[in-house]
Image 1 (cartoon, rainbow, N blue to C red):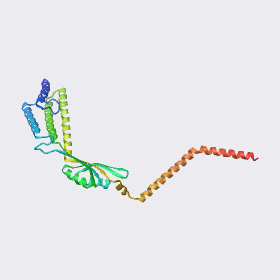
Image 2 (cartoon, rainbow, N blue to C red):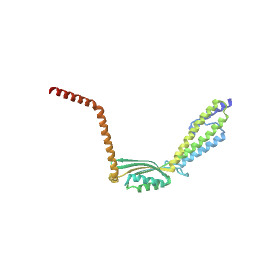
Image 3 (cartoon, rainbow, N blue to C red):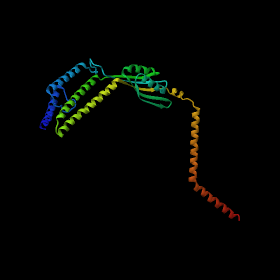
Image 4 (cartoon, rainbow, N blue to C red):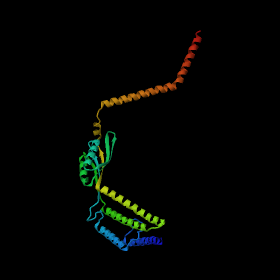
Amino acid sequence: MKKIAILLLALFLLAGCSSFQSSQSGEFSSSGVPAPEYDMMTENSVTADRSMMESESIVAQDESGYVEGVEQKVIKTGTLALHMESVQEGVELIKTKVAEWGGDTINSNVTRYDNSYYADMTVRVPSEQFDSAMSGLKELALYVSSEYTNADNITEAYMDLEARLNNLKEEEQQYLAILDKAVTVEEILQVTDYLSTVRYEIESAEGQLKYYDSNVDYSTISLALTEDESVAAAQEAWLPLSTFREALSEWVVFLQGLTDSVIYLAIFGWPVLVLILIVSVWRRRHHAKRHK
């Protein structure tokens, strides 16, 4: 037990020394928790590898995020405002085209304003189809009101996140090795707490990498569709049968309202009727007495 306590104390001391050294050399523990104790040869090797990786990254990268000698990670996005002959038909046609390009429609919302329709859509297409999709979508419109594209090179950030993830996994293994040597409950809880923190950051980094991969592999295009009011008005077909059904429905509603009025009159009007009847009888009797 004393050995474990000494080991944990050394762990904290090493963490303090590591923090001091990192302020000089620029190397920090990626998890924000004390680095565990392990073989010095391994530590020197890992430190040298990390320093080499960092120096190479600094030399190769530029301000745009481009990193020489590696596959570039680029997130492409686009925005189009299209004036269509028919918004409703255009929405269905765009969905069909996006499916042909191997993509999918994220959302589609069609709204009517007075005598015209408006739609906003969000679609995703494979990145290699992005330029073809932008051109193809513009060809579906009468004209393009506005267009915007963006290519965000995240190669540098992606590589840094991958390096950080590898460091976190190394720390996880080191804490697992220390956990095997722990004896008391207090020692186990302390190491487990550090291990939970590292694993949380591992999951966070892995989730961020998946998000990057998803947005690199598939490009997002936002669409706004409009049309002329005259076009929408001309497309409204004359349907006499529907007009007849609508008129019949309104007639039924009228009869229901009339029946309801009669019921209300019968319920609330009977006292008036009784009063009128009493006055009528009294006047007849009074008239009969005057003629006797």
